[in-house]
Image 1 (cartoon, rainbow, N blue to C red):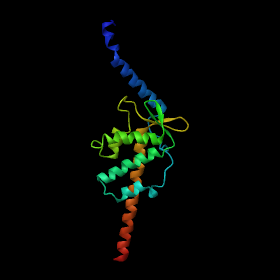
Image 2: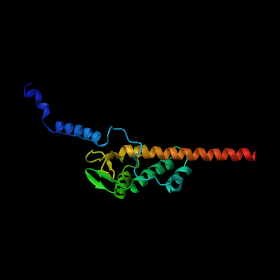
Image 3: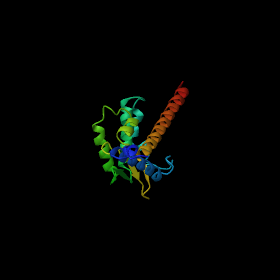
Amino acid sequence: MSRRGLKWLRGPKVFYLLLGVTLLLGTGCRTGSGTLDPGLSLGPSLGLDQSVVFQRALRAEPGTSKLEKARIDYLLERVRNSPYNFIRNGSRYTGKQAEAHFRWKYSFSVKRVKTAEDFIVWIATRSKLSGHPYFVEFLDKRRSLLRGLLTSELEHFDQALQSEREAAQALQTADAQSNG
């Protein structure tokens, strides 16, 4: 092949393309098969029934901004209380530092971020400056993408919220039947 035909291989676009592929493949190596180990979380689960954020979510009507704010606050609470390191642009941060950074980013995106899922995608997935994904580094130095862990934490929160609401509904139904 002529030198002219390979001209596209030179320049910053190819560098960034190769860097992206390397990061993508490297991410797959670090996180295993690419699927999240169901046992991984941001740390020990605190009793949701004792969580102020969970109680606030229970009082909020489904589909309201108050519920979404409680779901976002739960994710921030889990990050803050995590014993693991958070990796942003190659540097390690504590849970408290990561939470402060996410709150700072969120303060600029409140109008764009309407749901907890939006929060994960727009705030807690990657650096806006470098485009690099955020990671959680466990005590054994394994790393996992933060996005997957936050999604898992949110699913756990939503399941607990649903279970609690169903239990309360069943109690109300039983009370109504016994009184009527």
